[in-house]
Length: 527
Image (tube, rainbow, N blue to C red; front, side, top):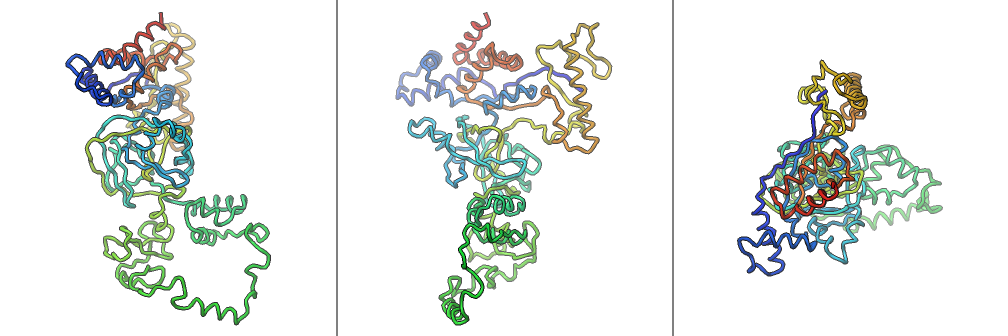
């Protein structure tokens, strides 16, 4: 076990004078008073803006800070949702009802008297990571994070997302920063429906007694796919439980032989809705795909299924049957490529990652307990270090856990954990020893669970709140002022104050005009 103290690092070089001039210019553009700008006018002008409470222009300057702290403190930081949720303004957010808006549109709602209340009513899409099913979640707020360099990730299914390099994306191996991904890696995209979940289908259709149409509408597909899924799993509702059943309807023998022949004649040739006169370019599942016969394969290129193989055209042009444009897919995989609004996610391969330069980016705050959202049909998260996939028995972690020394205990960071323990003869109290003993036991039980065959995400359940974690947070000056007011207050938790008070003093030294009033207020509280 290793004991360290909490710390922080400001990751951006801060030029206080340049920041004040930028804020003044932006504010005066909106006030149409650029002619009043002088070499020395910025400090007094920005100070006056803050005194008047007009802090919206502060949102155009952002600062990134890296915190090394325990899990308890990190949760307080994450509540502000400032941790690298940076996506471009044209990113599309889709609701459960299939309505969609860009992030920039939703951000502007917050300043529109008629619309700002509607933001919290949107049922946006998050992912329940335990089931990989899309669930409704509410947007708490959207914050402008400044202009930053962004990357564009494009997937094999045609989905694309523009975001910062440190933005974390949901992958089969957990949440991974975009800068650590490359072409050929897999990420999760919104698209896979619930048709493969037999237990859910049985519960929704049989136990909750919904109709097949209601099931299809909830999943986001047509009834024919639901019918095939029911047939695959042998799901059949008793006649007495069928809500749409009318007595006598569909009974065998309801039509005479002559009536059946007349119906057959009426549906022959061009009278049949499925009739296609030009059979050169119809799909393979209809039985005619002569133009792509040379491309036929015996299994789905995506999942390997060998039943009912269909032709998928990547550019959605059924007449373009070039080898680069045609894929062989089973009905299930074919469906999820075309339906990005389905209630689930699927593995999507990254085709390319491109650098696009700098653009305005935004941070979305979601409600608990789901710390993710679907952006352009790709699942993204914040950038806090997760214990879910961290295996502390590996060399990358030194084969030990690292814990943060609480500020209200005696200093133990200098101890050699293999030779020394805190004891009364060395000035340690019973409280010190109790904490140390709890950390040692937690580490022992954690490694015991791993030896017993538990996965890292299972073994982490015994890890302590004092476990060290790292959070990279990016926030604009207005948000930073709000955070410092709350977390430097004498009523805030001692461990969060241990980080935030020094950060306040350092920022005050670099940009005094912006942080003088907060530092003075905190000083008065402590007197």
